[in-house]
Length: 593
Ligand code: HEM
Ligand code: SF4
Image 1 (cartoon, rainbow, N blue to C red):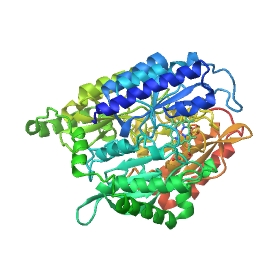
Image 2 (cartoon, helix red, strand yellow; image 1 turned 180 degrees about the vertical axis):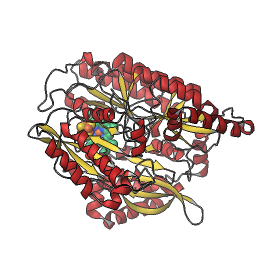
Image 3 (cartoon, rainbow, N blue to C red; image 1 turned 60 degrees about the vertical axis):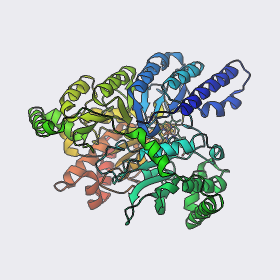
Image 4 (spheres, rainbow, N blue to C red; image 1 turned 90 degrees about the horizontal axis):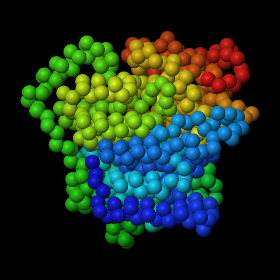
């Protein structure tokens, strides 16, 4: 994985020292909250109703075991709910503040959040993070945010080219870029190098896809203007093929056009998606004008040379692992097959949680952080430590945060799969549910977030509890269930095959359900927002509604049809009817699940 240079390290340490000074000035009253707020935000510190929230950048999701151990220490020593007053009630959300502490939370953009660290101790946390090259720079605010990518980058069997060197070059270009520190709104970039888009690039402000043209040259397809929130929009392709060495010049042109013409008068219309939608071709033309000026007048200053790409790529050379190819192949295949036949759960784990690898001796293994009794994507301090152990023992010390809020081990030897499975199962990280219904995405919702209209986590828990039966879960097959507590869409409800959105009616928690969304990360379909299936449901109805939708799928499906293909074939109506029949039989009081 990429190693920070001395330059990067110095920058991160300087930032931590600068932040300590800013915090001290705030605590002794020399800085007012209004003055301090932009400074803390530039380092990833939000303040929520009950406690601050820290977002830590994990560039393109790669995290080392050493970093995981420091994150575990932060969760254990700093993330304490008892340091905050969680007693004051919020209208309609009597139990707000119930999000567990001593945890880190994996996010859909491959970052990590802590929810219960007192601000007074925040500088100590930044110092600790800096010891392992971590920070919160550009994880918040109206700037270019941390670049995300495919969790299988560099190892995926369907990869055209490794996106990580480009993601790293983009990280260096966008970090503290003086021209783009105060954009109209935040700006999120995702990059993939694979045929299947596992990075949800079409839902990003800017989505890059590596491909080869008819001559075999490598370049990018460029999409702009994707996003969720109140107005879900799929990004438009504004360049079908951009030679790779021009990507920074072109991005500079895109962000420049946005910086200049994006709306600053209305926060809700400030994302680039609104500009692209309003201007259409005129936006693309403007980008081309800027791009020509950068290339022809300025001399294309950001052109990436082959030497620079090689320099950065050298950090992404696969670890040297002791795989004895010749003796391994047949023997391992045999051992795995026999073990899978002996133990159904191991077989299921091999099918769902283990993915093929560019190196046939290796596999990519996902540790599941979706289980009964905890928030989707939450990792306790102990689990982070144990995940670090697993990464060291089985994956050359490297793990990756996935878009689906899990951790992936990218360098697992085939012959070590049974041992890894036993260890992961002992730690409750081997649930064979990756890609299935209970591997859901959810935001913290009303249990923590003061923007929430409703809670996400009790809904998630009710569904995880209802679908514990692995036979049933596997029979239902691949289903993306996404839950957001409000229209800001942190839980990506728009892109869920089944999406659940918390809405506020008369100060009570209600939930709107959408169907047929896609993040484009499955081979089953292009990215598309789901369609609302009718008026919202009470909290107590939601699990029954989901069950009715799934029963309808089982009733309607033909052999080998997935949930989405059945939905596409039969349309929304049978699903709508089934969901609405739940309304009639359930009491209309919006009780808690
Ligand atoms: C309680 C803490 C959080 C707060 C206050 C918060 C706030 C927000 C807000 C206000 C937006 C909308 C911004 C806009 O449209 O310009 C947003 C978007 C987003 N949030 Fe969060 N968020 C929180 C936690 C999370 C978590 C835990 C995740 C991941 C699981 C997440 C992922 C996202 C993503 C991916 C978007 C972009 C959606 C889009 O494309 O418009 N957020 N967040
Ligand atoms: S979707 Fe809404 S409730 Fe959920 S974390 Fe985002 S802002 Fe908070």
